[in-house]
Length: 57
Image (cartoon, rainbow, N blue to C red):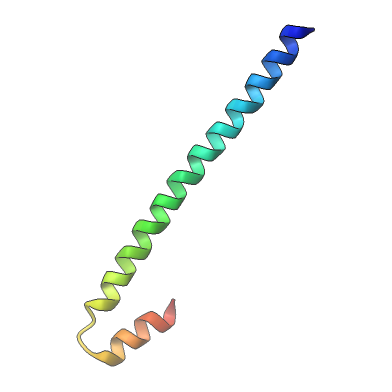
């Protein structure tokens, strides 16, 4: 019975660890995408195009 509890506890802990690692990857990807979009907005040749780019979100 004690080993069953230990096994279940370890399994749950590992599941949380995997989900946490996935969330980190998503956050890194979102940051990279946002940085890229910001750079595109800054490279717009006219002020109107920059304003339009940032207004789109």
